[in-house]
Image (cartoon, rainbow, N blue to C red; front, top):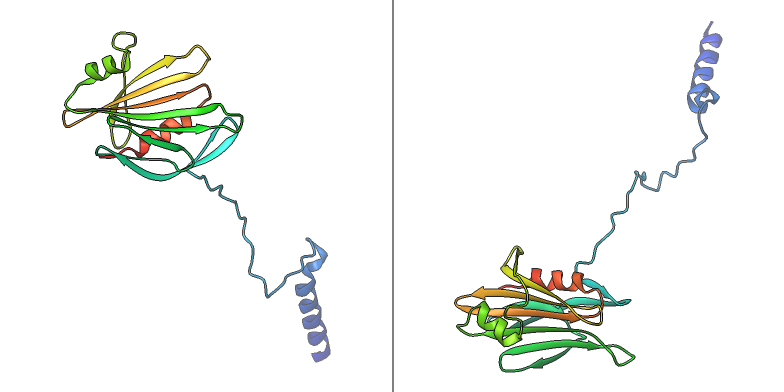
Length: 182
């Protein structure tokens, strides 16, 4: 009787280890931690902008007349009395874009528009980011490009961010505008 009990016990243990022959054979490495269903999260680089097949990073903290913003270190910078200009020249010698910030001390949007030569041509559109409110004007160019203006009023002063390019620079514009602080 004891022999039968031992045989049944051995049979049960054997079935336990073999899984009764059902299921898949799985080899387990006890030294490797169990892998779960890992979904790779794509990391989005918020500084990256692509213009005409070129990649740039908005990583240069800059300021001009109390306005702070982020731009691209690879752009050449020219600082004038009432504006600062950034531009990038492509390898073929053509300009990729111009980005300018104009400053008008104790002047309103109408005075700024007159100085820029767009006093009555275009209608303002309202917009805002987390940091600022602005009025924008979009001007089409003969070469198919754009000339966008963003008017920001702060303490009786007017700042105008101007973006000019024949390429799609909307992502660049958006990221620069989101970076603006006072």
